[in-house]
Structures are given as structure tokens and as C-alpha cells.
Image (cartoon, rainbow, N blue to C red; front, side, top):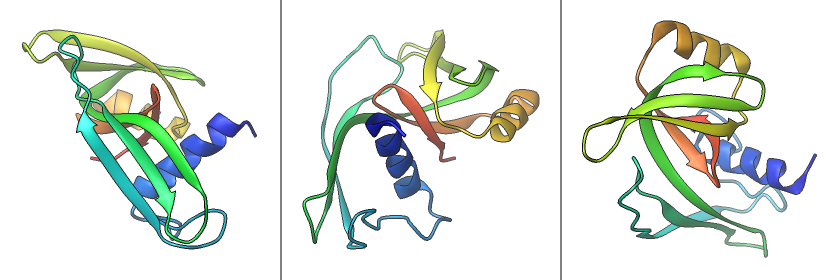
Length: 131
């Protein structure tokens, strides 16, 4: 498994509150600390990105990513990409395409239902549905 994909899966586990791995260091089992720095100002996007740092309180493990959440619905998806319909800060409709590590059945259900949910995006990859 590639380094980037492993980091994205670790980030997804951190936000997945149903997993026993949430906020536990994958290297030593210590507690992870999540720090979101001031938002990155970018008026052209439908989201507010943050520099995010996750580090272990016990060892040298850390991950740095630019993360944000986006409220929207699944328009299309395939094995590697998902297209999300959402809104810009001005209220106009926006379609955004991202790489993802989401489960096929979850994406299928979301597309069929048209449900609005919050997607967690880290380093331009959708890694978790959090709402």
C-alpha cells in the first residue's frame, strides 16, 4: 500500500467515531492529537480548507494535510473518483470531482438517495462521510 493511501486511511479512521482505532496512533498505540491551524483563505472554493496536523503524544508519528468538509450529494462515482454537487459561497451550484477511498456500497446508496451529507476531504481525497 502506498504511503499516501495509508495516510488517507489513517485520517479516515480518526474521524470515524465508530471504530476502535479512532485517535489511536497506528505505530505505538498512544493518543493522537489533532490540530487545525487558521483557515486558508480562498474565496473561489465552496469550502474553507485548514492546514491539519495529527501527531502522537507518545512517539514521532505525524501526518500533515490540508482538510475541509463539504456539504453536498453524490452525482457520479467510479472506483477512484467521486463527483459531489454542492454550493459556492455565493450560492451558485458547484460540481467538484475528487479522488476517494470510500466504500462502493456507501457511494451507491448516497447517489441513489440523493441525500445531502458532509464529506471530509484531505489533500483533495474524500476520505470519510461524516454527516
